Picture 1 (tube, rainbow, N blue to C red):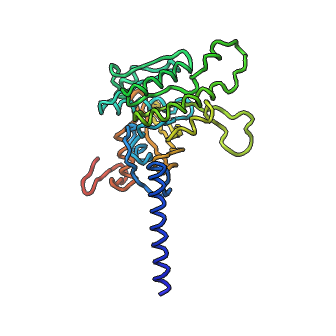
Picture 2: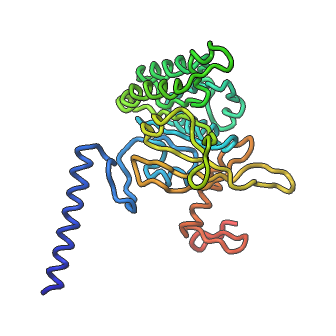
Picture 3: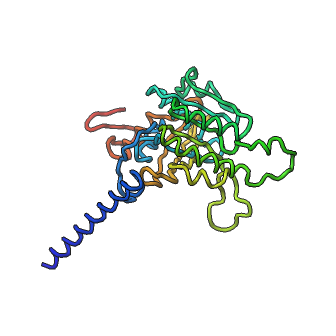
Length: 307
């Protein structure tokens, strides 16, 4: 009798927890709260990242539309490559995209190799941070764009700093600019269903000693707060063909995720001049999940040898 009573209490408690989660998600929005270990697909429109494993790690099948995403990492870690793949994936589904090239460093030839339709891509190379963010706001308000990439936050230099003298101090200007812009743009993006991808760099923390993360991202705290998804990209190995380095093995950590459980990790290959190796990515996931068996250099699916 006591065991039955305890079992009933556990079931009641579990039912109450489910009701609590349902009521909170209804009140605060789908995905506002969830069980960390629960893999639940939130009903939200997405744009594929171009990486099968990263789409899985994000929990919803890609970058969520109507949200702000921050992709950050060291130089040459694949940030722009990932953003361009997202643009190409959006264009495959007749989506429209814009690229705000604040760094003035976009390579059209490379973008084309990744599948970007250059004739359909809008590009802006603004002179200062204010212009860049005003253009971003106008694009989002238009209702005509599905994806906007800003490359990069570090290059969004305030007008006062550009027009000022060398050596002059402009402490906090960029952070205030970002905070003001994001307060407006976040709600506009959600209403219009626009995916906004901010590419960001890493900076060493001044005076950092002892424990803790020694690096941070520029642009203040606003982007960390307003971003629904933050992805930390790192090169973890070189890919060689003989003596030549032909690409990098890349690790993507989902450092923040407001639409699915965070902290998932994806690894994929980026081949120089070609971008993300999608086929290799799918095969790696299939092996990891046991769908494809690997024995030495032989791969098999069920009873069929793949090579």
